[in-house]
Image (cartoon, rainbow, N blue to C red):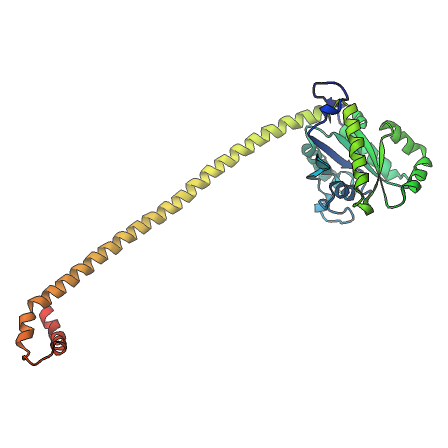
Length: 313
C-alpha cells in the first residue's frame, strides 16, 4: 500500500492559473482493454503507444512519451503491465516501480480509463489497484476518462444509470470525468476539453503534482543513480579513448616502421642505381672501343647492353 501523499506545491496563490507547470505529467491507468494506449495516442494526436489488444511483452511494459498539444508540453505514461492479471507478481511490481520512476517527481493528473458501459468487477479491481499504488490522496489528482465509440448523449445516459459502485468512484474523484472517443482522434476539441479539465484540477491543487514519501525516495534514488551512471559512462568513455588511442598508436608505430623500411629500401635502390650507372660510365671507353664510327647510337646502346654484365661485375 502506498503511503499517503499530497501536492508538491510551488509557492504562490493557490489555484492560480499563473502557477501551472510548464510540463504536465499524465499517467494513464485502468484495466487491460479499457483503452489506455489508444487514449494516449488520441491525446498526443499520433500513434505512440502499442494497442492493448496485442499480447506481446512490449505492450505490457510501462512506456513514456512526450508531445505538445495546443502549446501544452505533455508527458504521458502508459501502464499496461500494472493491471494485467496474467503477469506474475514480480513482473507487475517491476512495472509499478517503472511507472513511479517515469512519472517522478509525481503526476499532475492520473487518468483512470474506464470503458463506457457496464462497470465490471475488473474495473473495480483496477480502481483498488490505483489506490494501492498511489495512495488515497491520489484521488484529488484523478480524472475518470470514459472511452467510447458512441454518441456522447448515449454515454451520458449510461452514466446516469451507473450502479452505486461507479457512483462511489465518481464521488472519490470529485465528480471529475471526461468522455473520449478514440475512434475520432481527429476531433481535437475533445482533447482540448480534457486538458482544460486537467489544468483546472491542477490549479485547484495549488499548481503542483501529486507526491508521497515513495515518490520522494524515488526522486532521490533517480538523482543518485543518474550521477552514478554518468560517472560510469565517463569512465567507460575514458577507457574507450585509451583503447582507440592505443590501437592507432600501434598502427602509427607500424606505419612508421614500415615507412622507415620503405625509405631504407629507397636509399638502397638509389645507391644501386648510382653504382650501376657509375660502372657503366667507367666502361664507356670500352664500349666505344668496340664500335666503329659508322655505328649509330642505337647500335652502341645495344652493344652496351651486351657488355653491361661484364662492366658491372
